Amino acid sequence: MAFDVLILNGIIVDGTGSPRYCADVGISNGRIEAIGSLEHAEAARRIDAAGHVVAPGFIDMHTHSDVSLLDDPGGESKAHQGVTTEVTGNCSYSPFPAGRGGPKALQDDLGKSLIGNVPWEWNTLDDWAGALESNGISINVAPQVGNSALQIASGAIEDRPATSDELREMKRLAAEAVEMGAFSLSTGLSVTPSAYASTDEIVAICESIRHYEGAFYVTHARVGNGLHISAIEEAIEIGQRADIPVQFSHMAIIDRRAYGEGPAMVDLLVKAREAGLDITYDMYPYTAAGAGFNQLMPLWVQAGTTEDFMARLRDPDLRRRVSSEITAGHGGVEPQWDAWHVAYIHTEGNRRLVGKNIVEIADEREIAPADVVIELMEEENGSVPTLVHNRVESDVRYFMGHNLAMIGSDGNAVSPIGPYKDALPHPRFYGTHPRILGRYVREQPSVLTLEQAIHKMTGFPARRMGMKDRGHVKEGLTADLVVFDPETVIDNATWEHPHQYPDGIPYVLVRGVPVVDEGRHTAARPGKVLRRGQS
Image 1: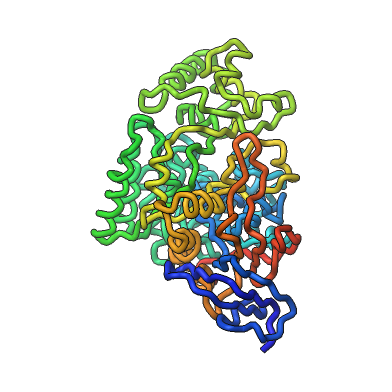
Image 2: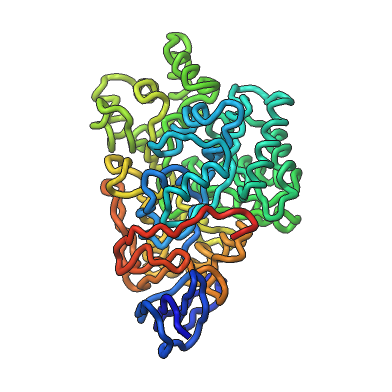
């Protein structure tokens, strides 16, 4: 038997959680053709994996690479991690459907949250997928449909209940997107306009898609000070009322008064599962979040269009009210101003602020910290991405180690030379998966075994997504594979220098095609937009 690619002498960790074993892997026509003793077989390409782990390509359960892959089609920051599939459309943000407002209205609003410089000309999931695939992508993308996109498409962008006509349109558009292959509906209940949606509205939209095989609900919940329990309770209520599986996004504790309360939070999920709800969560291995200054501001001031938002900030009375509410903080807890660092700036005049925290900028401008937030939101047209140091290592370790956790970076596929090169993105863009393998498997083995970690990155998310062709090293499945050295794999991305590839991941294959070969990106573009029920 002759293979296209033969991976020899590897340590197979197959994604199921089962113990590792030694074998060769033969690949033909983009699929795993054989696993076993194959050293005498013929092959066009032979890879010696002695001392290396051969695992399924990592499925990043929570990303925002919906449009960044048009600017950076190689997806280098993720490909070099071993990620072969990006799950997009999270936190209510998807670049479709455009609905009656058209693509420009959707981009004008969501373009502040989805990194990308390519003008949107598509209307539907199919149109967006066609744009990605015609341009070519190195890694796969698995889309979800976002609630904010549905609200913009239907006109439900004010701080009020949706009208019956708007809700009917959101339900129709959600079902249309799922029919086109979206895996789930996502919400972002602490960001606008998704935050304006009531529990009843979300339940109604979930009910419109629950009959599709494998469809589920994923939520960036109403997080904030004092909300770490109620956020989970609402997610459970939605899942139970709509009779739909639930994925809880980026599990963490950001209220400094509640550090250490992870067991009480996860126990809610455990009890819900015992009562029959299929609910799991994802998380990332860092003590800082990526957020925007918008999340420091009251929701009411952000209602409507960006122009409406900016007009309110120009009103002296409303501006004073906004400043007062920012200072008071969500839940009555004043923000830790020095924990918020500017990560990206759109205007040339403010470039020098990248990396500075709010206190430093306030001192420079001789204004109050809350007024820094307002001024920069004005100057940057309502979008100031930041890094926020707001959690503790003990909680990260607890959430990571629980058997309901899978891994989602909450980062984007970008490159060190692309449009985001001058920004300071969260290190998770480049380091999430090797950080877990190096720091939490090898250096801190009490957190995870290698088999557990790989399962959380592959087989577990594949099961949640309903993917039958990926997530495991098994004969007949698509050859999305990563080869890494368990003794040297480690992240190198830092807060000050995030555009750094990891060590110890020499080979990454997508559909049997090397996209990372001997540690170098090949520029091959074998990736596809995956569809619900077809992957």
